[in-house]
Image (tube, rainbow, N blue to C red):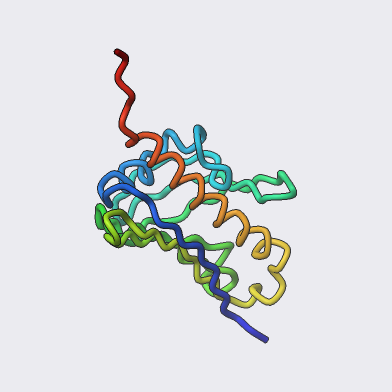
Length: 154
């Protein structure tokens, strides 16, 4: 049995890492743009607890979880760990890695799931893969819309 699973989503955003970071860590505004993590509260600081509400694509089912921020390196890396019950049962380490590339920012979102329940978590992990893609696409749209030059009236 496989006790580890990794899911990822990557997107190129035409904005600086600082601009992407600003949107990614503005948790109070997730409800305005994020179709997967539909609400969030907390601070992007190591040791801080976040309260995240996840909506699984296709089911509409929502789950609240409270991961702990492990790493917060502004403009570069945000990482948290969530657990179901005791350590080793079902753990997830979620990361957003921001890398300057081609005049913009490459965002790699990933989560490494581990634990005894991973082989039985397909009903959660399969739609989460789609949710990751929806989140990164929405992040790109949000950041690029906020940073688009405004047209001047004549």
